Image 1 (spheres, rainbow, N blue to C red):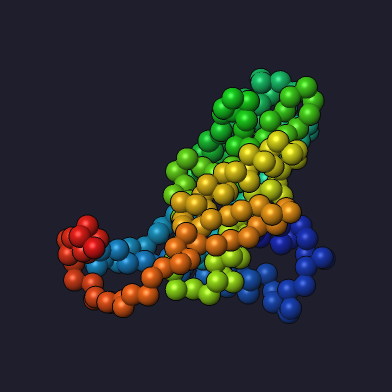
Image 2: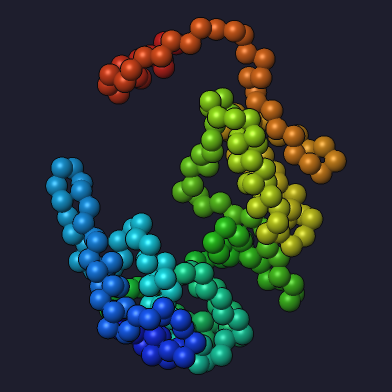
Length: 242
């Protein structure tokens, strides 16, 4: 909250508050932050520290908070510094300088402790990409976390064909657009096609365009029997025997 008010004072001449005073804005923000009640297992809980998931103000306040965390590091003028919400990407000239930046950022608040990724086979994951620097050349390719379930809208779901095609095409477009070279683009496209196949799609490359069809496009006409949910045990037995 203090960082928000500090930024408000610093940029007061450039912000249109639509007639709201600093006191009004402070009251409104505090009221929004008080909406932190959630229900779990029949009990109600209140989140007393941090930002509640799903709050409209959470991303903005996270950016404001990280702005204070990163100030001492920016004063050291690293070779490169990028940030998306709370994911930072820093390039320094030495490992010692990197360790110092990491230490300084973790000393800015007792309520937040940052972690850092370690390169694997020369590739450093950042957001949905992997970055490699070799001989002064930066290479980027698409990245999926090992914890990702890779679940898409399944090919046989009762959604319009255009919606399912858009889901897969958007994934393929993202996988190829973040890449810097043809080799990385080919590898990322192959990974995206594998994910599509796991979700029941058949993706073929024709003249650089993706044409999507489902594996069960020629299903026999069958009468569908819809059963209500009874229990997990009944559902498991039905799936096992049908």
